[in-house]
Length: 428
Image (cartoon, rainbow, N blue to C red; front, side):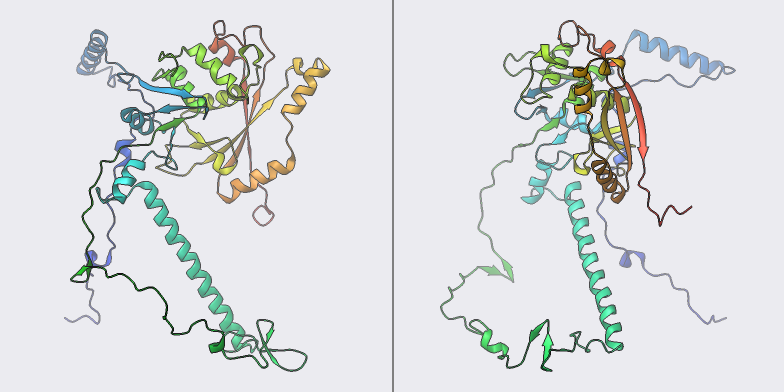
């Protein structure tokens, strides 16, 4: 029996484009934080083997405890010039980025991959980095938009030509007051031929002769050059909020002082970051409860504790970006703006305190509309976070007496999500 059509399956290998084998991100970034947890197996009450298994694992972990923190701890040093913490050890860089997306490469847009890009550029390694892949994708999108605009223009010109508004070559048939044809608003009466305006047409006299390039079978032969070993010149740069969260919140980082080569204590590091959040840095006895570092760290610690991956948002005119899993998996879902709030009665008790609070929380509606418009264009939800600033305390500025936990507990965080209202999308 012969069918009127033949259903032949095409060769899939011939029509599908070749794709680069990308790494398994679910395996590389499996740990959300630079800590290891060892949960107990599930307990089934009516199963004796399950009870024995849980008991055995509990006793084994109690007798031979496995460290949950990296051994040794990640190390870095504080740079007063950049007001950030630098991580130079390659294992620490890889661990902090792959386990929580902390920091930024000093020679990269985000992920520290300058070393891999340099090896690929010199031909020592095959493949593409994520930054190169993103650049290629953006170039393809740019060419696609150019081609789309060209086709749209061609359709418009064809329509105008059918209506008689333009000639078939796409040039408008306009005339000036004298009845002379005009092209691009320039009268062409008595215009000289184009050959008279050409510069040295078909003339290569006087030009330097190109050097002879040795070739072999159509391929250029390059002279052998001595390759020098490449050294990694990139370091990981942590913001003060990220560094202090790793030191105080997780205990996975140790920051050293370059002058004494000794690690900072948590209290001394807390006072150091607060002092350097001003320019120029303030003395410790002049610190206030609304220090820029203190306000921003409260919000950073808040969202990190909720499981979000918090990244700086200066690219989108906000303070932070919130990722569900990380920048390699998806785009940021929320953009966060941090604003101090002075609702405590202390900030309205005296004219000086009231004037200080009014000056520090002053923002305009134009600024808010501009920021909200930017987030709408990049399809992010804008979250305004108000931090309730407590009144000053007696021990708020001393690095030896301050209780960091008690100080942070005095702050309160309120979240407000804004959405830009557009008439054509919100008619209901």
